[in-house]
Length: 361
Image (tube, rainbow, N blue to C red; front, side):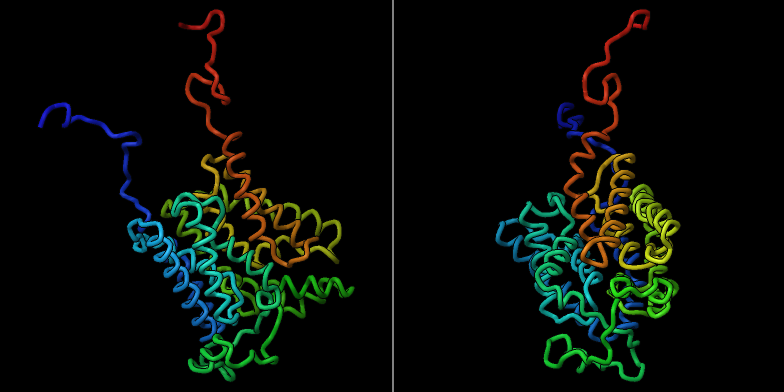
């Protein structure tokens, strides 16, 4: 071997820390596992069935799209599995199975593969599917059920749960309920006092321990928080986006609640309700669709949190995290442009720094 071949350098970067896509995806899945298992226990077999259908649809669509493109199958990297997983966590746990199947197809085919596959998508694939389903099928996507833990009286068994998921039997009216945010928005529109509406919904504490109506991503907020802290400790994500999301949501909530406590939710209720913990740690932090610099990530997180609060307060939907994430995914290139770090010897706009009189040459 000649010296030229021995010392030939590949394009930068040259440093490698031993991490790869598969390992990163497995760590995120591990962080999601406790909250997911808790959600399975809270909502029973229909939730398990919907999760399996959604993830299977995402994996099959990924394999099909890769075959159509004539590229090597990369199901092993776990990205399609994680996309289906996050989508399943954002769905009503007793939604019909076709919702999960269609969502898995939309997330992978339209949210990911149409842009060129992993690392090329402009928007978070799971949130693309979530918003598409919510806009297209609002009734099915807002049909919540009260918790029926596995093994409890009235909880469906495996066969009955499968029949519910496949639409063979309707969801009993006795178990239908409303999410905390949806219940509060409805009661406020009827002129009911906020404190009374929260008491009827079980209070803010129920949002933290998770035994209440909502999606799998709304249950077990504490377990999701612990999973997010695990990702921070392992270096999978940085703190800027989660802190930005929480601050962007909490700060206006504090001001609004201080001005009008009878009609504005407190910051604690906002943070514990909905899918904000899931969104802050697991969705907004997507490497591909979020800014690269620390300042850009902080600005991005603040914008998502603020927009989520605006949608929750005045929008037509009780929850706004999915819409906020997609809108700021679209702004990521702009944020990267104006928050890029300065190159040594150049201004932030890229022009060379001219030597001033008396400076060293």
